[in-house]
Structures are given as structure tokens and as C-alpha cells.
Length: 110
Image (cartoon, rainbow, N blue to C red):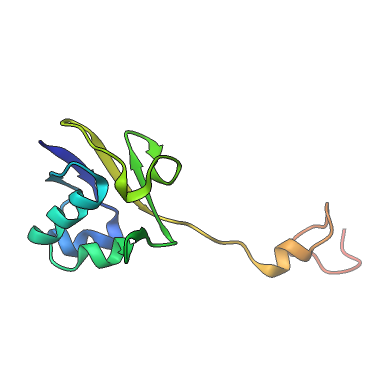
């Protein structure tokens, strides 16, 4: 069973720079174990114990596996799995600025 796995830039050092690799497994967890057998070190970047790491998102055919069965989500031949690091951002200053306040202007400037 062939599953295409799309790899984010930050994890491509484990796949020799490849953007996508093939893997196999009946579940997402088995797929990660299969990937580990050919790309040592990648599994520990994706899971902690038997759960997805907090800042890793995994999509099965564009569906977030956290809303399915997590790493127990079943896979089928021809499925596509996308691994994405979670993105967080913003600044505390931006969240405390009053609504409508201009950014980068000094008091008294128009």
C-alpha cells in the first residue's frame, strides 16, 4: 500500500531534502514507524509516546487527523498525508493595542 507523505521544509533533513516520500501502513502510527525505518529520527519529531506532538499537524487527504482518530486513523492505498508544523505568532503588544490604534505613529502625529 503506497501512501504519499508531504514533508515540511523543517523536516526535510530527515528525508535527504525530499519534499514528498512514500510510505506504508494501515494507520498513521504505522506509517510513521515505516518512515522511521527509512528516515531515522523523523518519528520522534512527530509523536510523543502514542500521541501527535502538540505543535505538529497531520492531514489525511486534507482532513486533520486530530478530528478523526489521531495516529490510529486508518489509511488506504493512494492516500495523501501532509505533515505541517503548527504556526503560532503575533506579539503581546499587538494584542494589547486598542482597536483602531495606528501602528508606528508617535503620540501627536497625524
